[in-house]
Image (cartoon, helix red, strand yellow):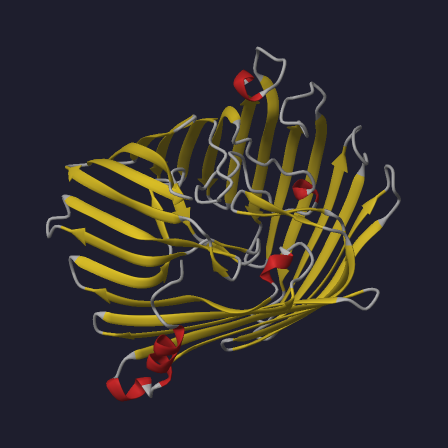
Length: 464
């Protein structure tokens, strides 16, 4: 199936003197090119243009991969116009024809989204309509189309809808999604409930499909200086090889180098777990304590009739602003991960310690420094890492970092780079030796092979 909306028609609308109609024309260019040791290269390039006037909008996204960068699927190679749309939006309704992104509930049943860090884009090409009543007590959306697959469209179709009713501070949502491939229907349904009163929020969601189901619940509390949240989730038989559901890992998304070495990836065949976070602020102090625990269900394991540990962690970070110039963060993460998702009893444990400091000499100059240490008796054992970043506002940033495995391989993984920013233009150059491992964004990960080389990143955004 091919999308009926011609890209040339959308492009002609965008480039036909948009200022004459007093609309808003926006665009963005993003390019990443890597030159690897040995002479090979990879390049990912994106151009997005959008035009809006009143209730009308149109857009197009072009992508060019002469050679996809390492870690990205080679099926992306080539040029394409996978994003194009026309849309009409009024106060109580909207209509979209073309390629769009959408989500029902928390995304367990259906989510189309883009993340260029992961090389992921599963937009849907077709039609979508939304509505809501003037009092916002009833709203809904309905869609039909074909999902994107690399630079083209998949051979299956998707149809679905969601309706939400609100009474006071309670909202009830129901959704259904049908994926049709080769004339075979795969139907799934969702029922969700949410509530909020003062500082308290709560939500629950159930998703069912042939051979699988999922349940999740979230509790939250937020007041001045203090907040807390807890999430529990159970998945069984929820692996969707088409990638149209969203199952991020239920644990803290780490940002420090050594804390990201062995991330957890969701076991969609069958897991149950929960995570919680506490945040407290007192004058110039900020405290955070969080943790998660996830087990594999027996139904997802062969030869086991009890739950097996998949992952657990405890994370503590303390931020202190000592004065107007100096701020520090102390961070500890205690992690235990099962590489077999509980199929084998053996797990890998690691403890990560970080000290992060930022000193602002004045409004223009700043220096950030990190020291990190990972202690482990498994895998490649102990690591040490450091980073220095100097800022010369408003244009320049320079950084250098190194991760050294002194427990086993005795290998350095280093990087040095510089970034220049001028208004909406940003250019970054870096060179380093990168370790093989997972690159994660929002709880979803892709595999990145080891490489040595340089990368040039460029981004430019405009509005007129």
